[in-house]
Image (tube, rainbow, N blue to C red):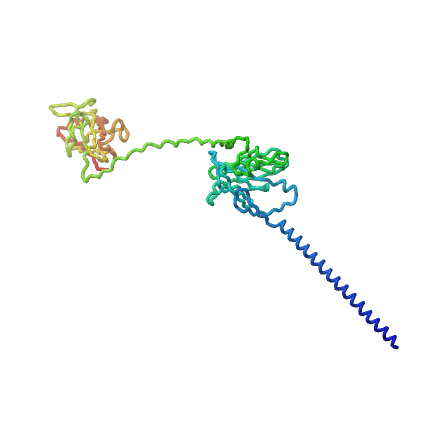
Length: 418
């Protein structure tokens, strides 16, 4: 019985020993697993950091600028690298003066650099596409231009083409890695020109870095400074011809305005014969006197006698002696004391024109309607009269009378200031 007990005890101890050994092995296995997990986690973290560094923001500084340029590079292949180049150049005014020690801005994303004393500048790693180049002075944009860089393997020669909207297209080959241009400042605009001598690629040509001393204003050895290209002269549009205006009609000055006197106007009436007297109010005038071209007018016993068929003409004139315009009219009337009226007819002529035609009329029907006479002007009239013979018996009866009846003809001129 004792032996059996002892054997059981030893077996239990052995079993416990085996149990401890298995436990220790399990702990070591767990520790190794945790270590591998930590190592794997560290590797994963390190890989993530490297990836984040590669695709993160890269801060670069362009040559002789002092400005920090912030860009994001997402290139992933040789084709995209071929579409990038270093843009170098020089900024000049149209008179050849350098834009020295000034700020140049390149936009797609804003980048800045400073020109040296000769106006040279550089932007590295510039992608093809649309860019805006600005020249800035004192924080104000002085000149600008828009360029479209077309990097294409079909472009065998580099050239600049001006587009209709005023921007410029630069056509370059894919193998170009440095593009040098000259920018001319002209009235707020910049005109770019290619400098083909420094248009370099990966076809065996060398970069001009050593010659230009990284653009530190050092001139290439053994070379002379060349004059900058002169921009082409753009002809001005022809000036359209000036069409003269039609001549304006002459301006006729109006007569001076004078005050109208409060009185009767001074209009002078007289026979149109040299030395004749002027008419006065209620004056007696010799209308039926003997004159040239009169007929059948006779003087018998010192008296003027007219007979059937008699004819005469009385010329008279009206003159404006005022400084104002006068309007006037003329009319006639008769007074015949004879029992049988004398058959005398009349007609009036102004100048050489009859008034109301050349027909013979009674005295009451002869009149000159309102007329206007300017200061200092004279109007001329002629009153024609005749004994109208139509009835011999009446003419004989009138001639047989011896009672000396009167026949009066009255001429009346009505005048006033206009």
